[in-house]
Image (cartoon, rainbow, N blue to C red; front, side, top):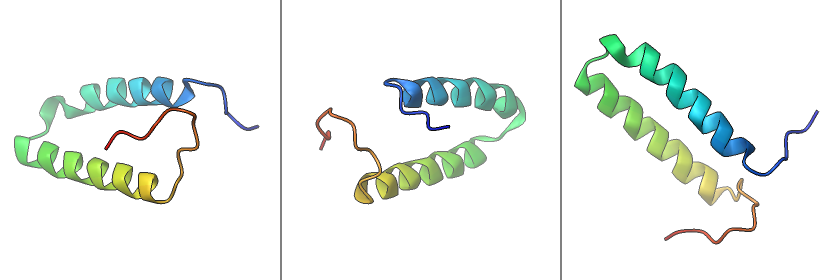
Length: 60
């Protein structure tokens, strides 16, 4: 049941953005900023944990 196909994370991200764009119609800019900050922190944590073990180089 593993989903290790290349590009699966970008598909998930696209799906997430689609869902979020529908949800965010009534969301204020402050809330958007809060969400963006949390997402950035999650991405940083994921990178630090070495969660991404793909072959592409890490962008610094």
